[in-house]
Length: 104
Image (cartoon, helix red, strand yellow):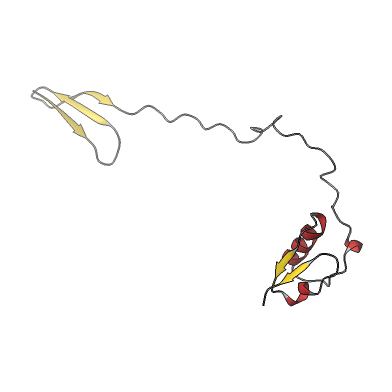
């Protein structure tokens, strides 16, 4: 007489044989493969051109009052890439350094 037993708390399968019910085999899934390290995985896949350390704009290049860092980031991005900024922020709608399309 032979029977199988599957433990619900694990993924192993026990195979029992004979009258004593002694296990004669334990079947388990193979171990998971080791994940590859992500550090250095993109080495030699990107070519950097230009200066990526220095800021794209000097603070003196635009006259915005000290405000939310996100506003400064959006303003600088609009200036560097010559974009029109779409905003409802009253502090940015009057900017002269880049085009702004106010949202009511």
